[in-house]
Image (tube, rainbow, N blue to C red):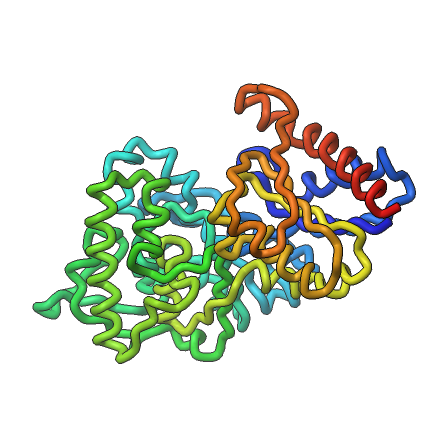
Length: 383
């Protein structure tokens, strides 16, 4: 029997690669001769650098970066194709975990959080001579519409009196921007292919946009969300007036607090992250003769169906195979939308009442147990 394991990381508990190893161990304990194909993946969120570098044979280098508040942090960047392709996680410089670590979290800190550090990472990749840059739009603690990142790459902003506005100050200044100048973008941008791979298929503004859907988890209060939405809407309108095109409704423009939008101003092309990475791994071919596909992520709920990895794995499986798709997760909040995209079953890993800390600590063990039982069930149904 053939099992394909195509999973994302379980944030705070287990990376994608050891999770796949744990699932394989559980399958082999029940079916020792099973064929197991492991694909430790990402969908544009955290882990994208490692997933792409595994697929393309690249390496991940440590480097210093600037966090959302302008402080130096330890970070990383991936290089493939002999250094000509760079892979960057938004979370490497603009992460939610970093923002949460500051005392200002839940006290309006999001208003001064900028993606400028991520823009600097892209700038360094261009200076390094990269002609292809892949940016994973996920795991951000920011909501600045990508204004900071775009500024790092040469975009300039002015208020109604034509005075410069510094986007490094975060969303608090977005409503002051009246004019946007993209004439001084870094020259290498014109020759580079920049793929912006997103984990959530949302526009920049509105009820489905980044402020309303995701800023609460970044520390924003109800009142903060209203202000953030006002400011980012004002910013998007200024951009549309200045460049003659409204990019705010594009799928993925709202990913990473609008970073997808800001980098689109610099010539980046938005792409569904899970689709992009599955294609790198040749998923469609691998799944054709599979007897079961096991996917997973930390939390599985209605947002999963917005384009996150398990939903994409399910859709691609159903296009190429009759194999059942089983999703394992740390927290399960099933929604009809999950089954609409092709997921056949969702199982939370916890097999008994336990504290959250114990669940996180024992994720690998729980994954092995779940996979052991799944292998037995699939085998019984097959025969």
